[in-house]
Image (cartoon, rainbow, N blue to C red; front, side, top):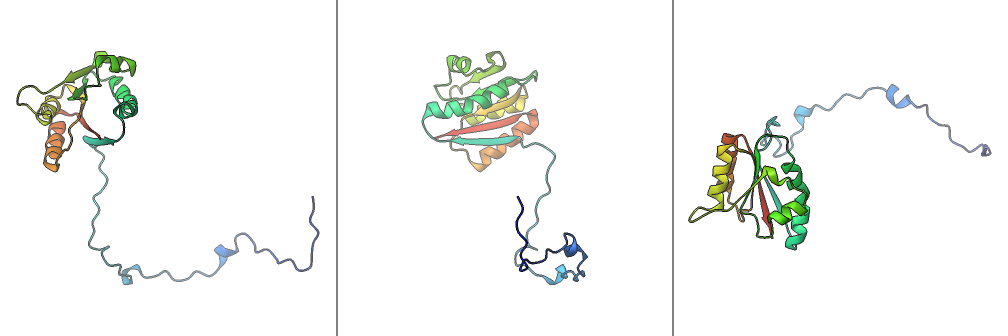
Length: 167
């Protein structure tokens, strides 16, 4: 289909004409002062993976566990010779739930604190020992100092710490 030519059509500029225009001098960036920019220093990206992560899930317990299942399944399939350790999971995380969710139960340890031991202490010990590639805990709430304790323990044991907050 052809469109009729009209005498009032505007001429089209050549494609590269914009690049052939005279170059304008660049702004002197040193003269620009943006308040607060000079005060901030960003930390460089680290090549090391983070050893502590936290996942917060809200809603019905069954729905939260359904969202969590693929993550735990992937972690349980790790070809590493170390364990996936679950510390103080909710009561609905049973051997039957692990089986139904498709987790490799031969590579998972379920642990609950005993006596006066807290979930934080047990998680720290499991991380420090280094027998687990990932230690998943359910500590809620978790303070900044507790988070730092888990980071230190994870680094010592060359492990990953994942804290799940339900609610």
